[in-house]
Image 1 (tube, rainbow, N blue to C red):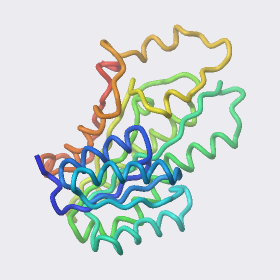
Image 2: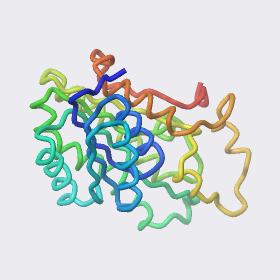
Image 3: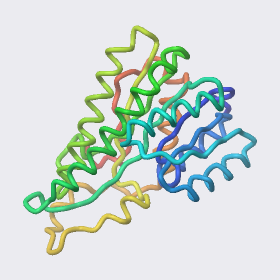
Length: 249
């Protein structure tokens, strides 16, 4: 299946986890990839592996929360490939803290990357995506749909991503642009593995966050992102799709 032949895709957070898995999935399907991340060596490794599938790929270091870097990344992609068809916003950070002691610094940092960074990339990419009748897939979370303990900043950022995605769908749908979001839950990634639960946490608060079978790898999210970004999803716009093993059902 080569749904992305001659399509140019920009992926943020491509060095690891869901971003990396998505880059490799789309490489298999023929996409030309512009992969961004703060981790220079790791994103270069993603590009090298993507190229083994016979596609063109470029690595670019970018802090999505920086307006100048977001604009530069999009422009570098268009300069490299001549167009932009799909924007996949996967870059994100997570830190778990009890709300009563959570710092403003943590709050601002999480929102600046997860929410503001997604907005900045979308804003920079919109003129090119409107020209190509392209689409956006943003990464939200099950934390945007149901309460998650010790994650006020993360949940707020992802709730904002979901709301923003619906706004884009309405604002630009008549102009040929689609915008959708995925809401992963119980996905094993480096970001989730680095999350440290608060000392003395109440384990019973985590029971409702467990999948019916088991946690899955990032490739399960990558396959859904690939579907939403493809023409197979041409009549899906403004949607949020849970990928959580019935965690919230």
